[in-house]
Amino acid sequence: MRVVLTGGGTGGHVYPALAVGHALKQRGHEVAYVGADGLEARVVPEHFPFHRLRAGKLDRTGLRPRELVKAGLGLWDGFRLVRRLKPDAVLATGGFAAFPFAFAAETLGVPVFLHEQNARLGLANRWLAPRARRLFLAVPFTLPPALEKKAETVGMPIVEKRVEREAAKRALGLDPDRPVLLVLGGSQGAKVFNEKLPELLGPFLERFQVLHQTGPRWLEATRAPGPGYHLAGYLNTVLAWSAADLAVTRAGAMTLAEAAYYRVPLVLVPLPTAADDHQRKNARLYAEAGAAVYLEQLELERLPEVLLSLDEARLEAMRNALARFDPRGSAERIAARIEELW
Figure 1: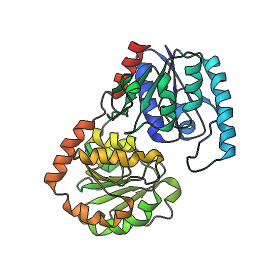
Figure 2: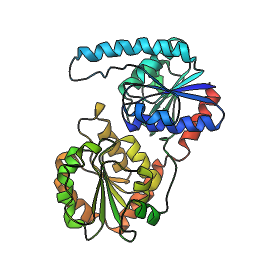
Figure 3: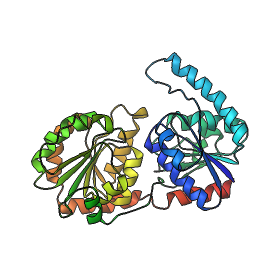
């Protein structure tokens, strides 16, 4: 088959598509990618042929005429690219960059498969789902009856690679003999984490070393509270998760899936402005399963209290609970189902 992947804007949309793309390529299929000017434009070309389109990001809080124009131009680009690339199937992983090409493919009769990473359908997937061939879910959640029959839970495709813990620590410049608390604010970083967590975590540096991803634009402005607090603009996540014993993170779907794969207990602080409030839904799902502790951003001052409550018995229980969300094999499952259902 010739399969075209589409989706973008954030790592949570791009990296799952890449994982499935590599699984499809290993099965002998031709793979290409359609996206906009987000993270996908920088990351994808080293993996697959990349075709750019224009895409408008619709703001739920108000009308933005320029984005509406870009959305219209994106649809024009989408139809043009479907006719040019002639895909046998399309896998769309969500985000505003996925909609134009996937919508055009559906309209022109190409089988479209969707993957939803969060515990609620994103806007693009809600619009695309009624005509999609299949809806793949990273985690189970309730859907309308018309969509329930075409949905199946397959997990979250990630890069399934581990590094021995001490080797990962050495590669990151960390002390191989000390526990590691990982701080992740998403691929772009989180300003509130950068401003508050060094002060809140400083008193714990005798208990563990901290590895804090600030996001590239915030690195220079973020100050470490002392030795053992390591700042990085961007991290190799395979090394970072391999080294981590505990993590304080946002509640994006990719972060949660990686934590489950590496069995790293979580303190989740969901982004309060996330679209459709999906990060809170994700965080509640993990917290109710016993795999994480959930803190609202306004409760960050309680972080020291939470960390003190996490003894080894509770951490072990959280690691065991994370097994429920283990994404291993997800990319292969999706690739196989696309073959079966095409």
